[in-house]
Image 1 (cartoon, rainbow, N blue to C red):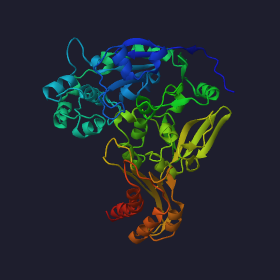
Image 2 (cartoon, helix red, strand yellow):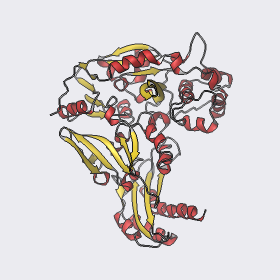
Image 3 (spheres, rainbow, N blue to C red):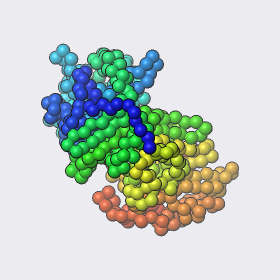
Image 4 (cartoon, rainbow, N blue to C red):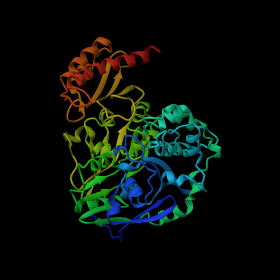
Length: 499
């Protein structure tokens, strides 16, 4: 069995608006928004939905990331209502109170006042923090670069503010405020809060394993994969937390209150994304915003789906491994992983093994993962030039919505571009698990690519799914989608062929 010989730290090390906090006991299990409001009485961070949907609770979180010349703090906006304090060890949190300096509003705050971007004001702090993150280059749409001298565009603002809801002001004034801010006159967060001292302290504790207990509850925040596996082996029933975008909601709604938590936020071996030899490899703990940036040119179809995967705040927290392990039949990434034949690298006390994701799910919320194992990495073969990949998401609204139905189609034609050599089809939201459609795939193989053939394939696809009716759509609606999506695929491909 794996053992961790290092001493453990019994508290979290968190900086809030430049001040050091050592968080232990009950406070370690609070959400960040509750800690700010109840413990520090910094009530500028507002709570509305407690689900990460409205963005009123948005704050900026800075973590050490490597850069030329050494590590620096990179800040990204997150929803504090579904982030737990134990996820923030060795992080610097900036709330709306932390933007004001020498009694003066920040340029973003000042612009919201001058452009009449606030009425009741409840949503305003969240908008201010999200826009500040965009100006900082938080990765939502700018790739993390320095924006100094470049004003935010309307498109960047629309994309970057999809996680922020306002019910009374009207978005035109808020957009005007964002566009009016001069980045050249906006202090970088590293100027307000110098990186050096915090980075030095965070680096000195980078190898610490953290275990905090309180009234029968335990949370472990290990610094290595070995230490994480050791804890999971000793506590096989523990709740594993990566981004907490689902667990945070469930906890806030009173559905769960885990007594043993394994938080993977500090496990460096679970981070990173890269590609080599036609395969994209990402750590299971890599945040969606990092994957989104990396695949923009590499796999445009996957990038397009990720841009409507939650909001920037959600993508800055949620992880690819969490999306897989949550085992939802409407997980947005899984149909893509199915048709690409992704392999999950699973780590356990005795080593690693690989599992084809098509064989991973064994029923609703059931999968091939032992109690002492963790998903470590995801290996995704990339589409070849000869293959056509199309990904689809159907939801009631375009942005920040749970899918009603998802689909992925990967097709390859012969050299003449007429006959289907092979096709893979995966549907989500059409059964208790994401499904491949083997009968439909077999029917299409060898057929001449045409509208009538795809139309007939759609009829066959209906027979391979067993959707249910729920608040997002009826079973009949999903059956019709299962049929129609293949006809949509044909027209998408045919349009491209004629261009």
